[in-house]
Length: 284
Image (cartoon, rainbow, N blue to C red; front, side, top):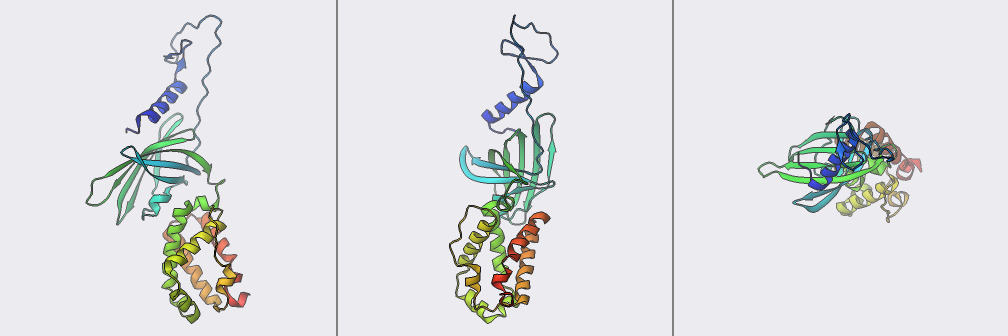
């Protein structure tokens, strides 16, 4: 696989430096070969490069096409799947990935499939905290598009905020978009005339924007919610416990739809449960 000449050359040289001895004239000598060290020269030590396991890691990458930057993305590896925040927004579920390689370089490969958008094939390598590779997007009826990506490890999933682990702004906005559409179609919730009239008078895109900003802020993201408090927005709507339960069911449908891991699902539900007292009339 060709992955951009300069970065890959650096990776190759680092691999050679780890696996080969370095002679005192600065050249590379095969391990075990006899060399004559210069007099009084101290032995040259080459620090070993270690690559942590991919599972639990988050990488921020830049993608280029025809050597032109086109997008940034966040890749996160769980025990089983590779998650792309940007491509999940286009309808690609997180694919399973495989790894290979010996020594400090870990190679990985994954193929994501979408009924509408075709397939994306990810192939890359990680050395230490550096990642690079290429991604080929094969859309039905079109010539495949090849992107080259490179970046670095930003954090582990344990260190990352809920915002990061959900895919950042792109991941959360995609889920909110789906959730709000389901909310508008929920018969139990829309049986409340006050809720139905309020939603009918409010642009759906605005509801999605405000929900996204508020959840991103609560999940540890950089966004700042500027709207009304939940208590003020829901005052007088007379939302009942059964209607709240319907919202929670729609939330669970959304978490399942986007393949959110169990741990993150529990955290999302905890965030939402913290709002119940401001939403349900009988709980106030």
